[in-house]
Image (cartoon, rainbow, N blue to C red):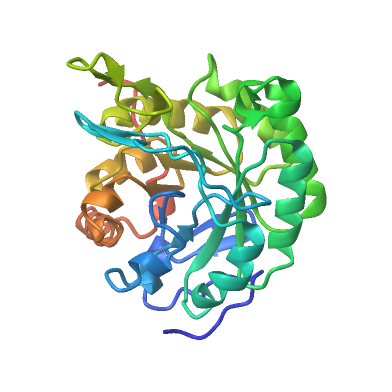
Length: 322
């Protein structure tokens, strides 16, 4: 284990090539590869299999104000080239995370990004306040795919005004780097991204899962208790890549790519399309070493192509004279 890091300055960056460093707001990461929320637990679950110090950041499982049990089973279903999940945002609650999980993470030289969700703006703000005061949290990622109970269950992330309201509210209560995680289940992703940027976001992460379902044809019932669930994995990568490319062209703040990233080549596609960093999600369930292999693969690519800094690759997609 490495020395503890101050919650504002983040990891030291030791052990990683300088050319891999990226910056999101005031957060400097040793490399652009993170683990996605909901796929890596609270970090401790993977620590025996993965060198956490090698990661750019860990995005922990989403946190609510109070603990949640989530949806009844069955709530995970494998699909061709991916999986459906309807976990229902099960988590231990923000206070239990701060007291019981965060101390473990402080002993590693890795940035910790806390994923936040709520059913009201007030809940988002209170969770963000508690995490901001907790040593060892380096940034906040706000999940706006959640239903707003005061607006009849409409997801925050499908209305630009609600995206802006949540972003501005959290911005007022935190000095940590603020990343807004966008839902792909909208007509124009750039409208949501611009709303978050205008309200004070330091970065945008996308995409969250697509809404899907699966049917047991013998029993003629849904495979998931919740009927629908979030589709993730390689099946959504082309959609995610397109949305990242569109968003990177629409905003000035950094974009983090998520969706079906399982190899270094996948990650490089997102970076070339405009993402400054990426998150590895469903691949963690299949190969716990996926994020580390992606880091090594990106480093090898930079060396092979004589590229000194990862920043030279960001947004380098050529679309003219193909």
